Image (cartoon, rainbow, N blue to C red):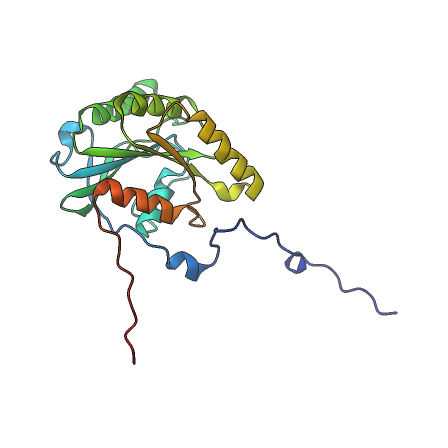
Length: 236
């Protein structure tokens, strides 16, 4: 009697990823992006570029994956620096799309291994930018889907509600959950944000590109950018 072939990890049947979640290189490469380049870093509003055009700010608790989200949306691996040490983003970083459109990476908050005065200074910079920047047209709040609605997140939501500022809540790292758990987290987020009509939650994965197209559609609308025109192959 022939012996059974030994089972190896590579031979095991893999679970299918949630529908709509690209996992292969070519699919990810085909995703649209916002072409941007680094303009400057600033310690606060007074050190920032001219307050004109339209800007979208990216905020999020340290270790939520904010830099990875920015890199995914711009199609660059290192536009926004990523670090295994939370709290490394200590400045306002401006990324220019065109003369009238810009993305702003705000300092991360929480879990930073630094003194209290430095953390307070970071928060002051964020609050100063949000309250004084007339070019700001929307905010992207990045959360870890496994740990949503922390204290800083709630502060941002309350500010957006009070100011009427459009808020896109990205439930990042959705790839860490199964399809059912991710869907449940999205529904819970929608209920949580019922009293904040300016806020819109969206499942997102910087790793796999899930939610990228939907997020870019919203960002382009906020920034007044035309949708990219798909290339049409010429007849031979």
